[in-house]
Image (cartoon, rainbow, N blue to C red; front, side, top):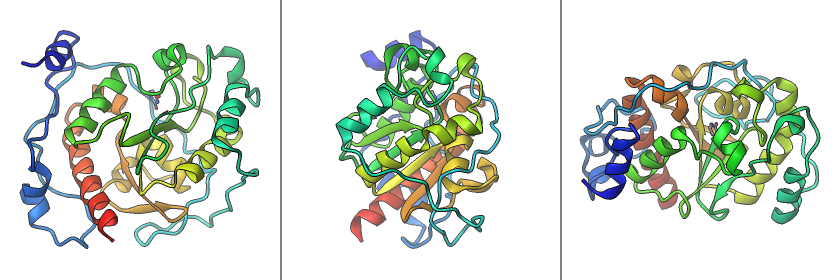
Length: 273
Ligand code: URA
């Protein structure tokens, strides 16, 4: 067992997801589907971690504020145009988030959590909001959900710092990890819109119902949204489960793995176009 796997097993996260070289390319799910078939795969993962249960996010009221671009496979609501301010430079945007006092969350946060990773990355992962650890450390996904996310990313051959940028819908922790409210999302949405405009990723992975419903302007649940290629402002978008949800709903990790296989295949296809 390598050191990382040992540490994870000691802290109770179970085995890592480690894709063997060529796994994605050679997997039956990859070989049996024509490249243009952008549907959920039906394979069962060969390696799937089984971490213990943990408190996780609770289902959220849909927050439909950002404006998606129409996608062939969803019937978006009459999409309002995203409200945007003039695009700030990245550093100015970071400062604006750090100093933000636009909603009540500024009174209870320890610090804002802007995002993390490579802002030139081709993958953009969007979660819900900072939790306790993130609020303390000022970085997204550093708690146990973040450890699971790291495992999932490395299993897909993605390096968290090099290949992806990770942001949240909200930049401040809702007290007690409660669901973000609609007005908090409204206050914060311009920051996420501007992050997306800067990064212009090849693929967005929306993690959890909150990110998915916010970006896609829909009230549909994850079950209906995953396994399809959506788009946000002409950027391809795939929906998967939130890692914190997966920590307490272990059977759904298989589906999350399928989502990653689908995302990886989609990304390869998009990169080849
Ligand atoms: N959950 C999220 O959605 N984002 C984080 O940064 C941490 C936990």
